[in-house]
Image 1 (cartoon, protein in one colour):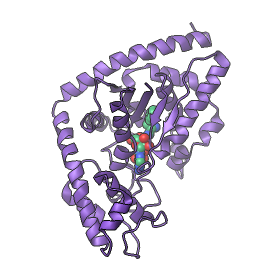
Image 2 (cartoon, helix red, strand yellow):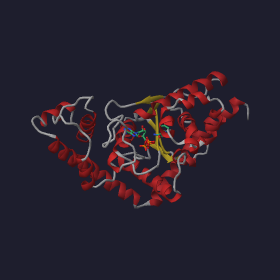
Image 3 (cartoon, helix red, strand yellow):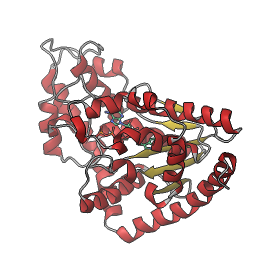
Image 4 (spheres, protein in one colour):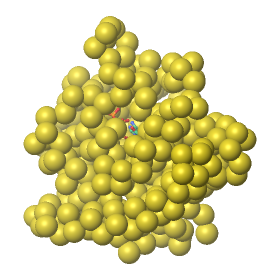
Length: 327
Ligand code: ATP
Ligand code: LTN
């Protein structure tokens, strides 16, 4: 039995990149009988400005999405990060062994701060250390994430090793798990950058809540090239991304897709892709709406999860406090 843990930010409506990069892989591992932890990282979300009412709504939305995607609170500890204060407590202690240089090297930090000058918060800089605390509190072995988070999980490994070396065996060394296809769904409007909910244009992503008309419009305007044939080629980034999405929502292989579009063009391919995406998302959307309609139940699930998580986290923190000499 391996311990699997992942987390997502409640920073807006989730998109298919989040779904295929992190949620679906997590649900698959959950069903193979592992010990699981999944939480909504609200304290990560506030590293960039959040409107409080919106944040509250997004936390509920993220929770409803996990449940709709098949996260089972009986098999998985499902909770809100801020409800288990040991996360921030351990982050502080890890801050005191983390080096400025290693945080400065984080590519996500560099990407998110480019051109922002002095307005960058300390929280955004320190975000990977809080993430390391998230992971190390629960003796996590496997962290299913999208490609962009690999470097952060590696930092968690480094900090765990450093702590263990200095204070004695305390933390399990975690490993990132990145799926082969779908680890990095690219933006529809710009296949050079990953699909992102914080993208400037709505045309960049397919949100899990997009309706059929919106999906159709976004897929129709997705960037391809002038070659016109349906053939998977990494160099044809726009088309390769669309074929990957097609494969993820239908379960067909790239070869099967190429076969069925022999002699056909982008128009037909895109129309079908939009339809398949819609067929894939509709049942998920209905389930999300059902869960959202009972906020009391959602809060109840999160509270139950937090209570159990606090017990595990406190056990680990007792050991940590003792090892560093504050207890
Ligand atoms: P944004 O999408 O705004 O950049 P983010 O990357 O911070 O936000 P999170 O909600 O924190 O998104 O990410 C949740 C999970 O989804 C992470 O494991 C991340 O790697 C994964 N993920 C995000 N974008 C993609 C993508 N385009 N393709 C595959 N996985 C992704
Ligand atoms: N930083 C991640 C979210 C995150 C996470 C974690 C993922 C916070 N803590 C622990 C896996 C494990 C992101 O923005 N995608």
